[in-house]
Length: 282
Ligand SMILES: Cc1cc2nc3c(=O)[nH]c(=O)nc-3n(C[C@H](O)[C@H](O)[C@H](O)COP(=O)(O)OP(=O)(O)OC[C@H]3O[C@@H](n4cnc5c(N)ncnc54)[C@H](O)[C@@H]3O)c2cc1C
Ligand code: FES
Image 1 (spheres, rainbow, N blue to C red):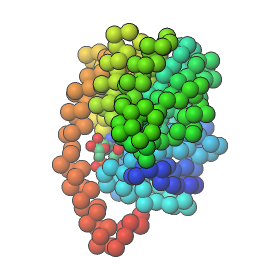
Image 2: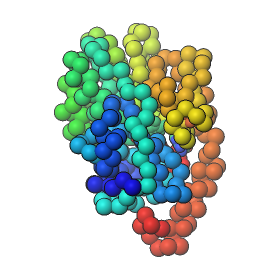
Image 3: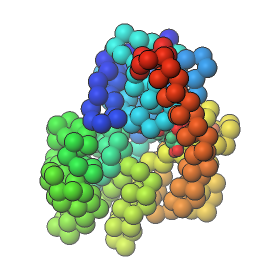
Image 4: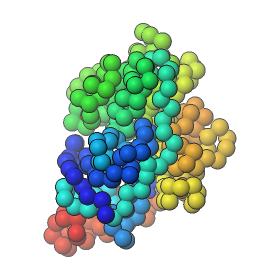
């Protein structure tokens, strides 16, 4: 069992948790993830390792369906059944020169650990954090410290640049040479934003989020098409060359289980109402 050391809400529906998992913490590298199972009957969900501190790892997640809503109801001192990892290939964080890290929504959770690894390799690191509005901006202080420069965008202009992170990326590319870019966020945001770097041939990485089950390359549920070939995101990724990813295929596969996911969340919420609350033992 894995103890939750700290738990807090960062923004609407977004939670941050520190979980004691010494094996994962001691081996984790930027870009890797864990698969966790809340209890014996729980489904397995992948979440990025967002930071490491001693024996603990941090996860930051959005409560979108049954399992993430259930997890959000856990408190410090509670225990989780399984935390498997670190899984996936680490980010390529060698010396590129100037690197830009672009985060959209909860995808920003993945960036500080990559920023620190890139800085440690001697890169200049520029962070761009985007969100729909200022209340949804994540990890501004932490990104500010991890990067040489931090730029903020909000879709509604409530903080920073009024517009999309992609626009800020264009501005940075117009003013100085950029040698590598990471874009991590919703599939549509990654698909659109990587078009900014394609004409300039800038090395661009995205972290893909297909449905995963075992996380070890055995079940095939996380298959994605990259450069015309089938890849398993759990073992070949989750980071891939953005300009070679079939995003339309990825988005289509992400919609496959929507009716079942909706039904599962509705059943969970009905169960909570019948039990009278959001305690995780419900
Ligand atoms: C490598 C990787 C890292 C991720 N890191 C983060 C993170 O740091 N923070 C975060 O908020 N989310 C992250 N996700 C997405 C997260 O795994 C899903 O939001 C979560 O599994 C949803 O489960 P649910 O039961 O609450 O929702 P459901 O209702 O079951 O599903 C809601 C949506 O989540 C996705 N999803 C569902 N089950 C899975 C699954 N087993 N594997 C992957 N996606 C699934 C689907 O797109 C689905 O439409 C990551 C996904 C991957 C593949
Ligand atoms: S999750 Fe099963 S092969 Fe990747």
